[in-house]
Image 1 (tube, rainbow, N blue to C red):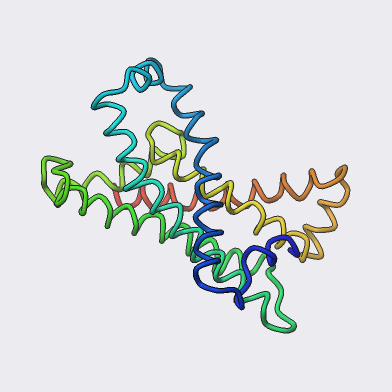
Image 2: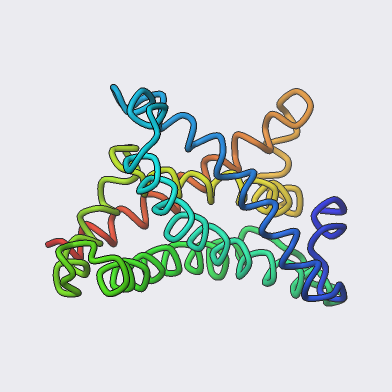
Amino acid sequence: MVVMQKYFAIEMSAVRFVRNTLFFSLLALVPPLMAFVAMTPGFGAMLASGGPPLGRFMRQVITNGLPVVFVVNYVSFFLFAWIVAKPGQRYGIKLVLLVDMPVRVIGFIALHVVIYVLSADLYGSFGGSRATALRVVAPTLARSFLFENISGVYLYATMVSALPLYVTAIENSDRLGGLARRFPRRLGFVLFAILLFGFSVLALTAFAALLVW
């Protein structure tokens, strides 16, 4: 938690807070983005050839992916900084389940809605139709947890960013923290943090599937 407070504290300047969040978001995007390119047959070769495919891909990442990851991270990091700044407050499992996780799930979906509609207006995506853009949000997100589309990259990029926060929550939990300490070094904390994020992914997928239905 001390490390997180060093980079995300309520008393630091807004410029520094935004800079740290942006840097963290960019770092979080790189691993899942590279994995997606490597796992999609022929995609890497197509991007390596440059031209319009590379331009469209970079535009998609910059105008869609980075804003989604940045905003979700900013809200989550701000909540974290606000909570730990209060004497006697702890960033624990209850706050993850009641605050951080709903913010990530709802924010992830809402940002996709806004960006898809803007993409239809500004770039002519989805045939330039706002209605089409809205219709594809839910089915796209319902498949993102399987890494079947680039929205999966953004989803798992938020996981990389969530891990330090969830590790902090587990450290402050008497029950989960005690179980995590039975594993060597910090392995238990990381494993339980991944399980917590997995729960949020399932919640997002279920909500998106409900919207499709």
